[in-house]
Length: 532
Image: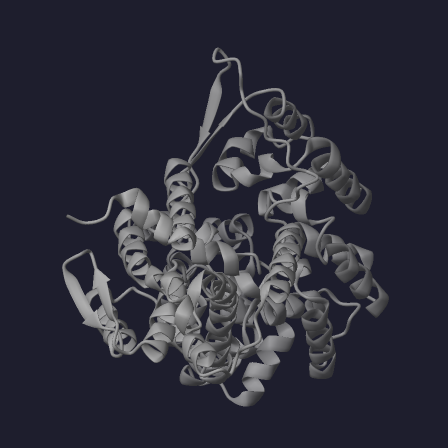
């Protein structure tokens, strides 16, 4: 008969505590329908300053199967706590668990950086690491080096020689669960060997407590700095009156139920008072965290700051439409310093207002990145005083270099020369913001139907932004009929750039005596476009 469960728990106190913590976090995540993307670690979130995710990602799990698999392996590895006679034991286990959590997370980010920046594999921008398996693989590796004769028991039915377990498990997991983080597991193995071989050593109670203190400090600071939570601003309170109504928000990948009480109702009333009522439900359904900020310490001061900058409630509402969370981060991040920097560079205040209302996320960039891209835009020939300058900044800051190079290659495939690309970018930088599919489709129609030369389009790149189905096809149909009848020949620029009202007056109503069904031809193409 085996030992009672409580005795086994007593033999592995640290392991039991960690399993309890991971289980409690999993239960909380499931109960509150928190998507793993909100706690996991990815390259992009790290670049945005979400360094706290190194910790939350390690202790969070996607599903009950994910949790059980990791905790079963961890329970077996808890034998390390009983090996004090060979230099391991409980203290060693706790000290180096802290190291494994932090170093494996940092190594994952380092690998992502190399894959994305050096090897240009943008796929890894979207990869989110979550789970305790990095640490599990680390301990598996340490035990294999310290006690190669041990065995790893899984679920009480599988037994693996520990000496081969790290790489066996790495390969096995990657085959059985393709979506598992190979890089995360590999990072755990690398850190594990670094510890086992003495490359990382000297951990004692003093260093462990010091490191834990720094982890907590960085965790809280990055949590606040990134705008994910602001502890001074957080005012969610429990609801004691069950008769109060509740409002349910269902954002993508994460549903939360927030009950209207004395904390939330005033925030809704405030947002309504500044004119966001028509869009309030739709915006908060996608960004419910906007209600997590304090009305007194965050929302109202942010509104006052934006109102002072924009001088108009209407423009503040426009900013809210773009990013409801701006009421939480515009005072805490780089927003103000980046605005001051651009103003010091000579950007007109009217252009800055346009930037804030149309693309506020640009102002979340690090000062270093913004400064380097400003210098780059000036070197390209953009004038700081012109609107085109900030459009270029939006593109240069908003897209990675690899993405811009890929879009330039698409334009080359369409027949543009290097000179054409430069001309187009200087004329309309936002042409680099179009998707590759949109570029190819628009260029094909302009060249094949309108007979434009690729270089002609480069000199008027705004044409690429028009809808092929809703604008180009209907107007091309009208222009073709007029040309065949010998009534009018117009340039593609004249046809596409004029407003709907002017187009109808100039190209349809003017010739309806000669071609009675011209309006039907135009509208027929529009209807077809909508249907398709």
